[in-house]
Structures are given as structure tokens and as C-alpha cells.
Image 1 (tube, rainbow, N blue to C red):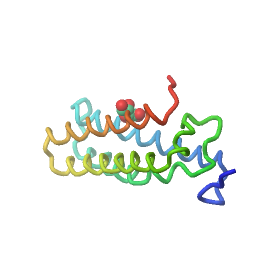
Image 2 (cartoon, helix red, strand yellow):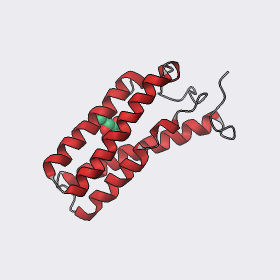
Image 3 (cartoon, rainbow, N blue to C red):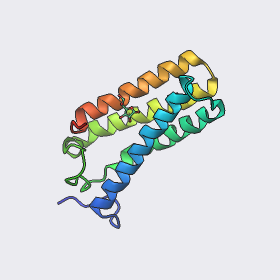
Image 4 (tube, rainbow, N blue to C red):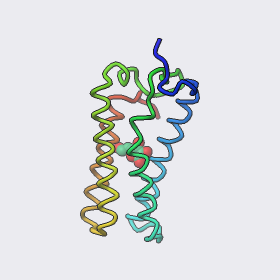
Length: 135
Ligand code: ASC
């Protein structure tokens, strides 16, 4: 039986935390896109969301401690069966979020669009392999 990375954190709480943080990542991505696409006129807040995305992106790999694959979770056991490969994917996600933040600072719309697409592909690639299909 694997022990959680943080001995003080119960598996259900590690899952609860992961779920909350990943939801916030998706919410920031959605908010970012509402501004980028021009639907919401809050240009100065684009960097707020890009920076939040990068800050969260840098911590994704910490959200999956051994033992946190509880029943409610959509995370597939494969995550803990191939930790090195998962780690690489998490690392790529971190890089993609950092690139979005850098592109947002540059103000180059093409660069932002490209970085946002790349980040979406990173999210999708990881979900396709490591997250259970759900609606
Ligand atoms: C998001 C979000 C995801 C990804 C994914 C990209 O904003 O919540 O899970 O992007 O849809 O394909």
C-alpha cells in the first residue's frame, strides 16, 4: 500500500485538493479565452489569468501523490503505474503554461493564439491517456 507524499494528507483530501486546483486551472483558461477572443473587455486581466495558469501549471506534478487514486477520482491508475512517463507529461504541461504567460506578456496575438492552442493540446494529450472518459 502506497503512502501519500504528504503523510498528513488523507487520500480523499489529496483528491479533493487536486480536483479543486485542476478546476481552477480550467476556469482560468476559460476566463483567459473570453478576454483573448474579445467577448469580455478586460484586457488588463489577461495577464492575471495567464500568470495563474503558469503558477498552477508549475505545480501539477505535486497533485498526484501515491495513494490519492480514490474511487471518486477520474485519474487513471496508469498515472501511478508509469510515474516517469507521467512526470514527463506534467513537465510538458508546465512548459506549455509558462509559454502562454510569456506570450501574454509579449502582447503578440499570434504568439498568444499559438501558445493557447499548444496548451490545449497538452491538456488534451494528458487527459486522453491519464483521465477516465466522462461527460
Ligand atoms: C480547458 C479545460 C480542459 C482543457 C481541454 C483542452 O480549458 O478545462 O480540460 O482545456 O479541454 O482540450
